[in-house]
Length: 268
Image (tube, rainbow, N blue to C red; front, side, top):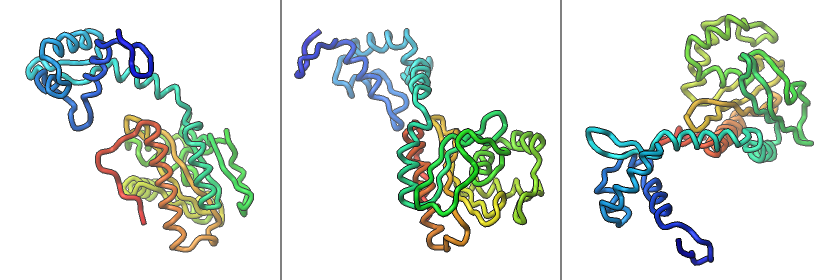
C-alpha cells in the first residue's frame, strides 16, 4: 500500500483490478488479454493474474473459444442492489417540480402495481387552474388517463389482453375509448411515437400528455404526465408540453441507469 496525494492509503493491486473493470464500456464489451495489457500499460502476466482473480469472483467472464474477457454477472448483481437502494420518487422529485414550474400545469408520476395504475407523486402549483381528485396513493384502472396507456403500450400483447380482460374498458366521457381493437391500435401508436396524448377520455375538458420512464434494463418502470384544461393549450403550446414532458421522462430514466445508443428525438 502507498499514500495518495491526498494522504489516503490505497492498494496498488486493487487499483489495477479496478482499472481492468473500468476498461470495458459500451464500445468495448469484450477485450483480449493483449488489448487489456495495451490499455493499462501493464505486462501480460500481471493482467492475466488480475483477470484470473476477477474471474474467480465472477467480476469477469472469459469466452472459452475466443479467450476474450467481458464483465461478469457479479457486477450486475451489485448494480441491482445499488439501483434498488434508490427511490424512484426521490430521483424524480426535483424533475417533477421543475416540469411543473416550467409549464404551470399539474404533473403526475405513476406506476403499475397489482394490475392497477398507482399515483406515487403529484405536483400542483399555486397557479394551477384546476384541482384533480387523483392524489398520491390513489388507484385507477390500468389504462386510465395519460399514464395508463403509456404503461400498457410497452407490455407484451398477451399482458395487455390479460389486463383488459380483468379491467374492461368503460365509458366515463363522450370520448372514452371502449372498443378493445381501437384501444390496442392507440397503444401501438403510443409505443411508436414515445408518448401518449389523452384527450378527455377519463375527464371532460381535461387533456394529458404522458411519457415513459425506463429503468437500467430499458424496461418501462413508470410514467410521468402533464394534465391541463383542454382549451388552455393550442397546437404550439401542446408541442412544448410534449417536448418538456418527454425530456423530463428521459432525464429521470437516465438517473435510474437507463442508457441508449440511439436516442429517439424529442418532438419539436
